[in-house]
Image (tube, rainbow, N blue to C red; front, top):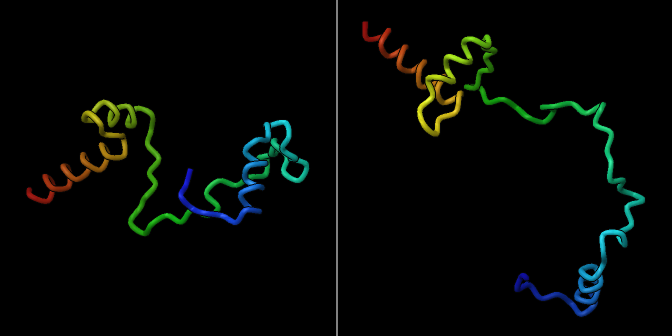
Length: 92
């Protein structure tokens, strides 16, 4: 419980809400099921300027997955391998 103090009226309302069961909650204005068929993914997400989305073939993805160090995800592995290759190529 938080240490915030409320007016006696608000405290009474909160006590009443805490005592309510799930079936006592009026969901008439907020249905429990939502139809997601018209939803659009990524509508509000803006990719950073330095981000790049790369589509990898399954065999290439499997290779990178096999190269992963412990605790490293595929994105980290791709970045590490690419850095290593670029540095080696730049040094030559």
